[in-house]
Structures are given as structure tokens and as C-alpha cells.
Length: 487
Image 1 (tube, helix red, strand yellow):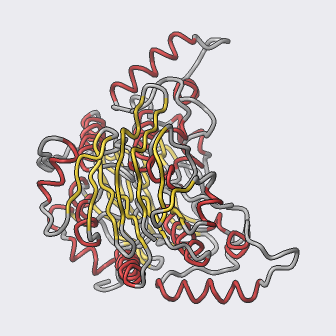
Image 2 (tube, rainbow, N blue to C red):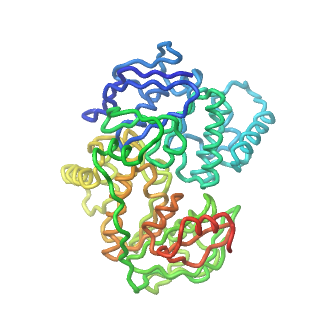
Image 3 (cartoon, rainbow, N blue to C red):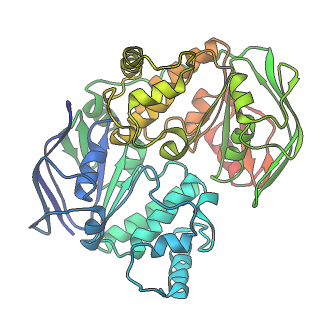
């Protein structure tokens, strides 16, 4: 299906998200959409899928002007989108998420649908169980579920917004191979990303956005420096690796065991030093999330002891860990980290300690404006959190962190962030390390883990490696361990 966007315009208050966008995407191509956070990429895709209505401009499908009234209308027209944050129903099973919204009467053909889920799952090399409850799945698995469902619905245009966040290198490889195959069969693929290497590897053409405008289109051979300059109007340097790790240990884990219904990890022994950054590597669902939630007091270890400053915290709740200076940033922003329907100001009111009976609105707005400036959030104090782009939601989540924290736990901290934003965020995190805060984080980007960690733990099939020195480790070494080799 050929897509033509003519003079698309969209504003949110003072923010001009899309400014006179003209773009044609031929059928059977893999079109890259590249740009900084808040450049208007996701907004344009939400207009194409009926989630937003444009203030001006036209959409043409196969040269026929159409009005896409809603996401359901878009799917009926053959356009489906995988959003940054999974749009599913966690309390329900995978197969029920497939069946929702489809025509099947009171008694849908569940066995036929189950066979289709298994077939598609095998084709992508995804391990999706039709009878699994979505709430037991990782963010990466839930993204995979949505990809399968859109293909099952028969979409002719598949839009993927940052689809590789939270999935393993092997799953990404399988996904890319499938997208190439689907494009060869005539499916139009739109790949929205901030990861330059993925766009260069996968896409047959790339449109680059900056500050709401389409600044240019590029075809192979690609030059990374050209992409960076088009995105930011300047070159961007990663900078030198820095460390503020001290010899003093704040947190000690002794013989820790953690488990859920499908995984049992035992005998973790670790001392976390002041100012240290520890990266957690492994395939999605290998135990990194369990480990972070245990460190946050959100789940109890089944064995062993955890102590802060030699005080036993084993079995204490999340509030006790919070009071001890622990903060947790989850991967699922809109479900666990932020509250849809609430403004930025309301989020900052909730995140701060208050001793008065009533909230001082002026002080709250001043605080919000200060955080918006400090974290370069593209929004206003009255912006509802779901109106922000994924990258700006991530900035808001990081801006909610209180001062004087002792331990910061993060799942995919730069998820959905462009390269400049990721570098800037880590510079802010390293400043906290300089003030003796420790950081434990997980990421699917091994380069990010190697660049910002002092030590690395690799998770595989219920096993946890001894701490590895990040300076002497490599992507190849980590990849071998993640794949189960060299244990």
C-alpha cells in the first residue's frame, strides 16, 4: 500500500508537533523515520493511525484521499501500529488479547486462533504462549505479542515505533529478517527509531525529522555523520568513560535467592559500592527485572539477606526502601512510573514530600517549570503525561527522582531516547554517582552497558555471573554469555 501525506499539520497548545509534513512512502519499502525526541515522529504516525486528527493536511492511501477516524478504522484500512508502550490488557490471556475487537460472535474459534498464534510465534522465533496472562510477560514479550496480533489482523502497513527496546539481539535479528521478507511480499513497513545503526541496517530509505519539520530524505549509501547533523544541526560526541566508584560499600547481598513462577535464581552474593554503576545484561526475562524489584523492596527474596549500612532490610517493604534512599524507574512508564490523565504539575506534586495541609499551587508550578527547563521536557506544566512523546515521558520520569538518593534502579533508562538525549541523561546520572549514589540498571543495548557501567552482571537461565569489569569486557564476550556460552 502506497502512503502519501500532504501538508500535515498538528499542534498541542504552543508545541508545533508537525509542521507542514509532505512525505510519500511507496508500497513494499521499509521506510525509516528518524529524529530527535519530540521531533514529531510519533505524532505523525498517530495521525496516520487515527489516534490523533491532524489540524490540517490530507492522507492518501494508494492515491485515494481518506479520513482515518480512529485506530480501529486504521486497522480496517490495513494500517497497524506497534506503540512504544504496549496497548494490551494485562489481566487477560494472550489469546483473549488477540480476540478482542474482532468479529467472532459469542463463540470465537479459539483453537484456530491459538494455532495462528503458535505459527506466527514460531515464524518470528518468539516464545509466546497463547494461554499466558499478559501481566506475567515482560515489556519485550508484550511488544512481540502486538506485532503478532497486527500481522494476524492482516495489516498491509506495519508501523513500528521503537520496536527493538527490550528484546534480545537474537529476537531483533529475527524481527529484521521478517520485516525484510514482508516488504518483499509487498507490505509497507514504517520503522520509527532513534537508533542510527538499526535504521542504516534495515531501511531502504529514511526521512529525518527535527523540531516538527521534515528536514530531508536519504537513500543508501548512508553516512552516520550526515544523519546526526540532520537530526541535531550539529555533531554529537559520546565523551570519555567516567567512573566515581568508591571503595565503601553501602549495600550487601548474601546468598540471595529470588523466583517467580517460571524462574528461580539462587545464591547471589554482591556488594554495591558508593558511586558505582552496575549494568545487568541478559535476554529479556532472564531475571534482571526480578533482581531490580528485589532491590527496591517490591518483592521479597526467598532466601539470603540484604543489608543497607549493615542494617538488615530482608523482607522490608517498598516504603522502607524508599525511606532508605532507594528509587525505582520501571520500563513500563505509563503503567508503573507515570499516571495517565494527570498533568506534569500533578506528577511533581505527588513526587515531593509535603508537610502542609494544602498544596501551594504557585510553588508546584514553579517547581514543574524548573524541572521542565532542567530536563529539556517538551511540554508545559498543564500537559497531560500521555500527550508527551515517549522520549519526553522518559525525561519526565527521570525528573521525578528526588535529591540525595542512595540507590537508583532503572529498567532501560534511555528507552526511546535519541543519542544526544541518552548522553545527556547519563551525564545527569553520573553527577548523582559523584554524590555517592549507586546505580543498578538493565538495558538491551550492550554498548550502553559497557559505556556506563563499572561492573556487569550477566543473567542466563537462572544463573548470574560473577561481576565482570566493564573496562575489560566486550560486546562479543557479553553476547556469548547471554547466549549461554562460556559459563
